[in-house]
Length: 430
Image (tube, rainbow, N blue to C red; front, top):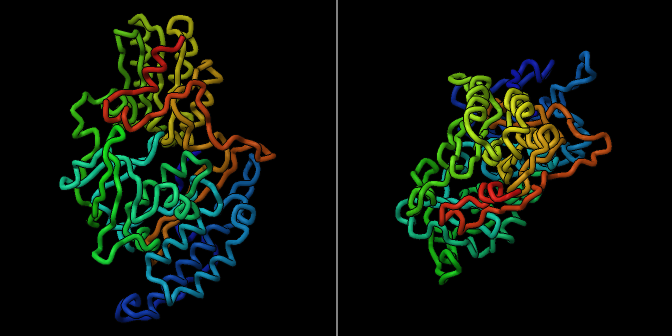
């Protein structure tokens, strides 16, 4: 559902001819040259998203956005308004207008990859994460490490919910879980803070914070730094053991047998084959462990899985299906970062293995638009992701999120304590 297709300009444009740039000095050095380049980019974007479909054995596929006129009914009017304003807008504002336009489809896959420029390279010297019980400081530069884990009460004078309301038109989402998760990543960006007039005259942003555990509140004035500046994560400074789910975040998939609870834990972080260890080989080792140990339950953790190819999990699913009597119940952990093909996998596991879903509502929806393609605008180099197929029901009646059978939300206190309520709930379940 989330297979990315990189499609060259010639395939998209089909007869669309770019205006040649003036020779000599780069056109972008003059206001007129800059405006011309943006106009070319907007023409390229329009041609790419509107590229017509073509017939294949299974029906009609698209090169451009599937159901373009339905999902973007106001596209031409919005783009015309942007063209009229180009001369008066800095690049950061042009990008924000494009973000709002692409997000207006309310398709979570449809989005602009944020660039390392245009006012998006500078950020607050700390980062936020939206937990089940509120927005908190999840990472910070060394000079602000003392506020890690603090609940955010205001940013630039706005409460998190007020800021979220402002940001909503600029975020691609299909449910409130995805909205909060994605918005948190924009709340420390210079261009965003500047747009909403949240940066003080001294170039800093004022935050009001509450100490972990409902302690005293304080006000903090935070600087903006380059996005490459190192920040320390909350887990790195906590004086608690690293929870199992956070022990191998960059590994495609891994597993561990937990003898104390006789649990076979499998973390599946990406729906792709690792070339160093194909998924079929991994599944074979998991099933060998299942056969060699007394297993009372299997836990498949999809909480960090943002999708890919939904078919990859097949060998594990079929292998467990033949062992249901010997491995006990199957539990699938889901959460805000469970997206695209990972959501489809959770649905398949519940159906094929009678798995119980545990955790928090998924960020992705089961169904909807997918089969992601992308195009790169020729001058700004902005990368636009869009969808070329529809996987939902004919009457568009699919739920917008996948809801767990057993709720086990991750709260700020859980992160500070190094505990995992979802895994604990799965182990306790009968």
